[in-house]
Length: 317
Image (tube, rainbow, N blue to C red; front, side, top):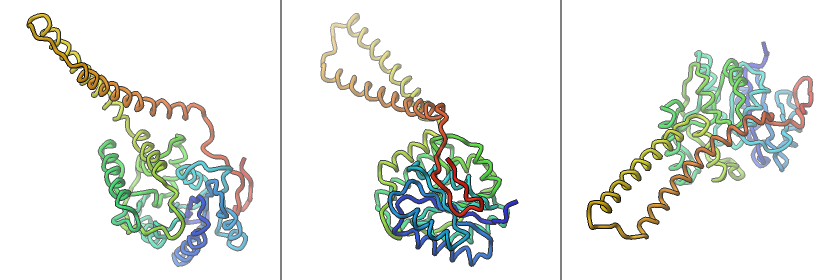
């Protein structure tokens, strides 16, 4: 059994402006906890000095570890690597931007000692975020909750503590398009929430622009439910039935009355609507097919350039 009680997994991407403050606050919190710990930084292909700063800290602090990716693989993959390398009996996942306060970790550890295997942070308020992001986040989590029958807690992120057995269970889930908060919930075990206020980013810019947010939202939907496919089936059935009934109506007018329907503009408009819906349905199917394609290629989730701070100091290729 590992002598490390708590592993703190910190994915980072171009966080040189904040990373030393992140280290300082995490160090202070964990020193006060009285538990043995490791600070496991995952450098997700940063182009700034983030990895260099952590490597320097590792020289003077034996609790600091660095896993340096060969390129940017994405936040969810970086967290996955952190869980792969973590040695603690409890693993805490926290972003490097300090929006999730490290000072919440002791409360998570208390819940863990009470017997809970997963302790997730639940945001009761978001500071420093735009109204657009707050509204879209609120709607998205409730929409996702609807699609997944309420299986994923609302207003939660990746900031959470997981027990060693949960971490080991996660290693058995090899999918490429990862939505970790859903996956952790899927494996089960006893779970509890710790409420907190999400802070404004301490420094730097967000690493989740609209494009990445949309992809992340799609991962959450398409990785955990096939209801969009069922919806496409229902829409197709309704449109086909409507079209058939309309055809019978047109034939009735032509054969049994002296009236005929005119108006090519309306017919073209209806065709455009139907064709648009068809393309949307094909896009939904394409999303699932594309994810199958990613899975069958069998590529590793990530490539590590080097590791620093581990006892054997081995390099992974």
